Length: 99
Image 1: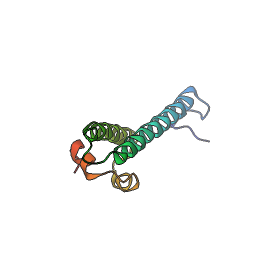
Image 2 (image 1 turned 60 degrees about the horizontal axis):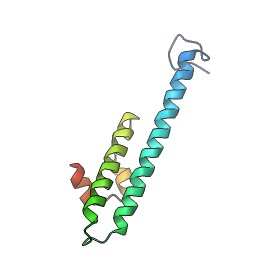
Image 3 (image 1 turned 90 degrees about the vertical axis):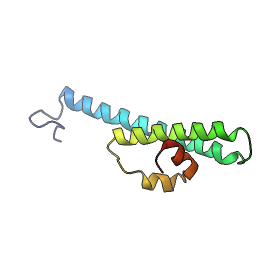
Image 4 (image 1 turned 45 degrees about the horizontal axis):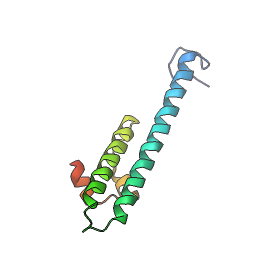
């Protein structure tokens, strides 16, 4: 197995650190995705005329925004597939300034 950095042996401390960083990024991405999914599910449970809807909309927009930032930190720049997969409402995207 080759090192992530040319010229360094595969078992170097830097290679292990690189793998640890990738694992942490993946874990953070998974947590952010789950938070977004839960916030969107809570939003969908609240009727449009309910007075708690605005707070749920704000929470969903914040969670989705954090998820998008984490995706970008991991190198994923396009979010169209996630918008479809998570069925992110236009109201959330507008609040984020993304629509």
